[in-house]
Length: 317
Image (tube, rainbow, N blue to C red):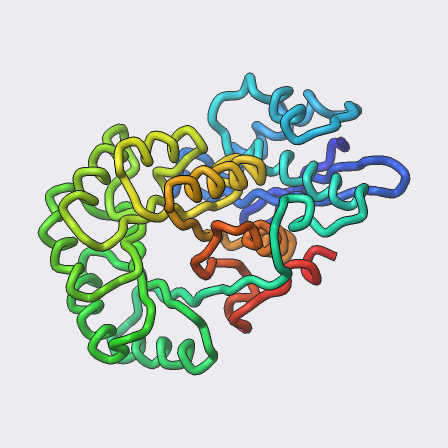
């Protein structure tokens, strides 16, 4: 592994893994610029990578992703930081073996479906026009941001205009158990899921389990699905019926693969979430999305804005 971690102007880190004989590969991890989505952020992740993680693997011959993770296991949390290195190892290993990354991961097929997403708009009419554009382009599903002031009336207008299309709402942890009645009212709209309705705090998995028992619409965990262990706990508690996997949030490709496999054992579908990755990270997400339990169209950036599917094998070249 080579000590080369670049810090782009906005956010995102690109560790480079050097395997000798002309083989090298780039990983990517995209923590937010500020610690608003999780406790990690761009500068903190860069410091952890450079000062604590990279020195443990520079110049070492690492023969498996688990061996890499074992070397950096002394650092607690910091999933975005460890993911950048672990992803780079996977990409390098696939190149050394001469196979596409999705084949190395155990994926099937070479194309994956992607969805369209729309945030809060200046008006309902603007939102409806954008949705119509996405429907006309052939996107299989649409995610709608859902937050106080842009909630039930918005969903009502959208469902009235598009009675049979697949939608889900993303709450970005904006609500509390006191809003249970609001979520009960969403049941009538036949949404595919409600993504991360409640705050990601010490009671998150318990509160989501209580909410899931109170409503029919599937809950999808995002911010609260920090790791394989968190997902194991969520399944035992009944906290969700769907899991969003963001490869950097859960600590890398190995954890992502294990999470979708575990969820498959419990009939819980998964899908790939995005962190506004560059083309490097978007390609890696597309490769991961070929695994069999990623059954819901993903958020894969940047191609989602221009095509309804993306080719895993072509984008990993």
